[in-house]
Amino acid sequence: MFTGLIREMATVKRYANHTLTLRADYRPGIGDSVAVNGICLTVTALHPDGFDVELADETRSVIDESRLSGRVHIEPAMQMGERFEGHIVQGHVDCMGEITAITPRTNGTDFRIRIPEAFLAYVIPKGSVTVDGISLTVNEVGEENFRLTIIPHTLENTLFQTYKVGTRVNIETDFFARYIDHILSRRETRKQKSLSWSEVDAMSMSF
Image (tube, rainbow, N blue to C red):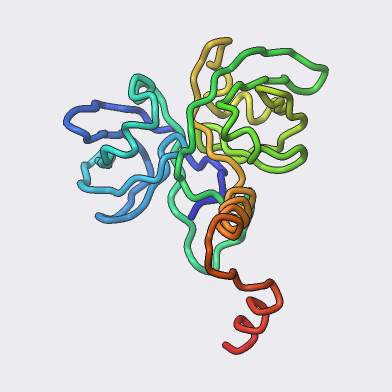
């Protein structure tokens, strides 16, 4: 689990045979989880100046591999007892989004991002969304895109400073929206009677 708060900008040294080699100050351990541009990946090797992570076939089928170059966002997984900031991020990319408009404002910059309609239902006004691993607040949801306002600090310290119209980005939608939708849709389609919320509460209280 992650928070969507970027801890470092790492540099890609190479990407070959499903293995991504990064140069970074952060020192993980073998088997640790690290989010790279919002993708939860496992550390498989350590180097004096960084580490390797491996991308599974499922991950590679969703993301745009051409973006695994240059600088990338990294965030180590949360540890028990750490201060919780940002929002709950799993590091599971739902889809690719595309920057469709960039509009400078007085104290920030608006970005509009288009995503497939199937995932737009999980993007909620004033809710949270993760873009390339960054926890952000949704300002507006349209028929095919959503709008974010990026403050100067975020613009200066993340890849947002490099984004242009047409740039593709990793999107993870709201954790709770996806879970609630799945539960309700399963309740409607299953022949077996689903548990009521009161029954779920009673079960939880018994532990």
